Length: 335
Image (tube, rainbow, N blue to C red):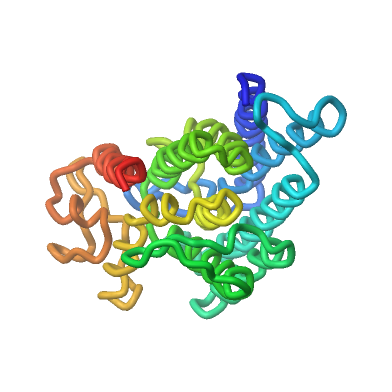
């Protein structure tokens, strides 16, 4: 690949950057607002920023496909054939489906505006299963898969029929658990998307690298509006999108090992939430400029490592979470 591919990322950034203000106005008009729980006055903030990120990603990928179709088929090692185009389109459809499911989860908001009621627990895995179908029907990915403590195993027909849906459903729902602070979801996403994209490029998984590139630039544009104090919240549409991305980069880019390692914070979050039967609140409440935990000194979520002390601001907690993600994402180069 060469520097030309940066254009796709730049387009993705621009599209998201200019789409997000329009989305904010639209969400305010339809009153899709929730209370920002970590603020003193709990202001109402639009939710479901994943829609803007999705539009930006589609803009970058469609430009990539357009340029490939009308101008070239191969350049600097990036070989684009019908199979690779099929992988890109299947990935786009999967991201579209899973983001819309997240949007549905955002739509139903409590009358008090405290948070969204969302889908029922049994509905979430069932609906997100639909996002795996595009990847299943094209038999995406390599059948040889790296498994922890085992090594590389040829999974055969089990891979598309069982492991792909498990990966998509599991990743999307796990990422969805770790949220609740301004800029945390997007900030952590920038880290693991960027690291996985670089890993894909170095390992010559160019389709994975292209998808990661446009997702990264789109996330960076959205982060400008989502960082503290947020003008728009990520919502389930973004967390589902990011979970879908992790599954897609693992499958399409044949980067299962790297994706699993980068996802360790979400595995930890799953275990912690399971201890409280998935009823714990990741976010806290404002007191004297700091964020306090609703669960006192108990740790039922990774942010509770910091909110339980009552010594840190929201910005500091988000910074710590991003550092945690950076540590685990960097481990992909060591294993």
